[in-house]
Every structure is written in C-alpha cells, then in structure tokens.
Length: 452
Ligand SMILES: [Zn+2]
Image (cartoon, helix red, strand yellow):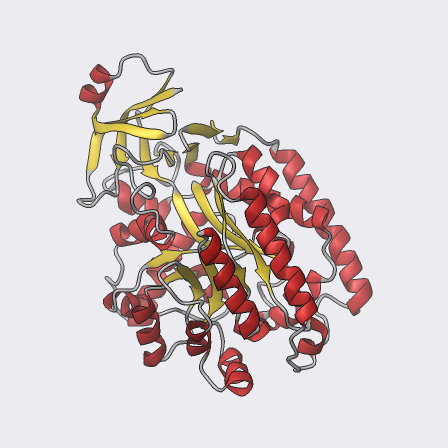
C-alpha cells in the first residue's frame, strides 16, 4: 500500500523544523519514503495507491501523549471540580466497582477520541489495561500499555493506613507479566507493553523492584506517577524516610527508560535526581491546571531532562493540552514568550518520541521514519487566515480540524471519522457503562465521593 499526500503544507518537525509549502509526503507500507517539494515528490512517485489532495491542508506528525488513563473518562464531568479529593474519594474506590467490560467500553471511546484528535501514540497505564489490547489492535492506533500495579490495601489507605499485601503484589505482577508475554510487540509492533507501578504511596519497594526486574528481563520500558502532591512527600517520608524521588530512584524506577508523570511538586534536589537518572517527564499541563499545579518544565529543559506531553484523564482534544503547555509555562515564569508555538509542537511530537526511546523512528516527518501523521483541514473556521501554520495549529487547532490520521502507514481516520470503529456505538457504550458503574458506586459509598 502506498499513499501520496501532495500540494499540502508539511510541518516536518525535523531537526531544522522545515516547513514545505507546497510539500508532499510519500508513504510505502509502514514507512515515510520521501518528503519534499510537492512537484518533485509527485514526479518521483506517480503511481501511489491513494493520493490525498493537500490543498488547504496541513500535514503534521501525530501527537504522542505520554500519560493517559483512557478508562478514567468514567470521571468526565464528575471529578473536575472535586480537587485532589478525587484520588482517595473517587479514583481508588472506583477500582472496586468498574467491571472489565465497563472499563473497556469507556476506554474504547477515549482511544477513539484521541485518535481523531491526531494522537497516534498513547502511553496508557491503568488497572486491567490488558482489556484494551484487542481494541487497540482493531482501531489501528499505537499504544504503550501497562497494568497500573499497586499492592497497598486500598481500604486501609482510605483510613490513612499504609499496609502492603504480598498476595496482592504477586497477583498484580503476574497480571502485568502475563500481559507483556501475550501482547508486547503485537499488532505489527503498535502495542508495546510496559511495567507501570502506580505511585510511591501505594507501591511497596518490593513491587517497584519486581517491576524493574520484569522490565529488564523482557526489554520493557517503565512509567509511574511522581511529584504529584504534598501528601506524597509526607507519606513517603513517614513510611520510608526518604523523598518520593529518592524512593523511586532507590527502587529502580528512575532511569533513561522511565517516564515519570506530573513532577509538579519538586525540590531542587528532586530535579537533580531526575536529571542524573536520565528519566523523562510526562508533563500534563491541562490536568495539572485543573488541580491547581504547574510543573516547572523550563527548569527541566535547562537541566537536560526530556519533557513530553500527556493528557492524563478525561480530556479528548489533545490540542487543548498543547495550548495548555504554552499557557502554563507563561504563567509559571511570568514570561510572555516562555514556550513558543514551535517549542510546543516539538514537545507534543518529538518530546514524546524521545521519552519513549523512539526519536529514531517516530515523532517527525522524515524519510525512513514510521508513517504516523495527521492531515488537518485549514479551511476550517478558526484556522484562516493561515499566516503561520504552526501558530495556528498550536493556538487555534481542534480535534474537529483533523481530517485524516495515518498510523503505521494505514489510514485510520478518514474524512474525520474512525475507519475501524463505529463512533455512535463507542459513545453509547461508554454512556451505558458509566451510568451503570456510578449507580453501583453511589449504592456502595452513599454518594459520588466515598468517605475517606
Ligand atoms: Zn495519571
């Protein structure tokens, strides 16, 4: 299968940030074969199986979102105003409520939404994340996926007690390893399994060390939550006598193959630990802003730490996340030019590729790289006049403007619609599952926030 996208504005996001206008991209099988001035590429490749007319359109690399919990869309419209109380009051208790089928229905909608938003790669960590693998294979997106393991007694945690359960740990590790053995590298390499212990307060040293061992034995990457709240600092200090960053480092969770999500509650010592470890940051500016926090990403970049962008939960339009990265950086530094549009687009594409160790084959539109990209309709309201296609994408783009998405050289969003899933079925499935789950939640806990 070959695809030629011609007469478009091509944002390569390569090392020189080349913009070709009019430019063309020629794809064969899963790879980008040629990128250049439109006439030249069209003449060299006259017989493509499919030709996409790029007049009025912009081609950009697919977004890489390095932190997601797709099933947490069950909290959409429910936890945004709940503050950090949603973690013990909603997120943790919901683990005891949501069935695998309900989780699949809700998360499938999110996977579809993200793909339509130009997100070609997600790093998805969640309880029972294995449930999504067949749907990812069907939908056509690329996903790093991990069982979000934890071995703390969740009921005791809601009482402020922290006890770790060896039996639970063994079961969680067995599920995570079975998932890796069954699915890592499947779907033509689009599914990559990771080891993803949840966070410092509900993951014991034994769980973290077992995750590191399992990852090293199988060549898997790792991710975890880190630097997300003052409570984390207090609890880890109380339980283990060190800071959360020291705790994660000392138990094998901070290294060049690790993505640490959030990192907005950090000391200078923590930043130094991150930089020394080579670990990458998944910055979730929109979600963090909802909770009243901003991560110091300029400091991270100055320290040589790779920063990528993540959604976390509930949001479906990744353009909002890219915008939030700019806004939050400017508020944090009081610098009106902190993070320019070009920087934001790099964070959303090459930043993610670097965080996943894939800068050699993902994140930009260059010959030899895997064909993961989007085509946006710049005749859409909100995107004209196009005086600068990059600023328009970052400040004015939306999911609705994404017309075509290609992953692994295959068109998976066509004419703004998912090719391999029915959107109404996804939407209705998520609605029914969420209503059922919340019905049981309220019955069990007496309201939409469990007492803790
Ligand atoms: Zn998260």
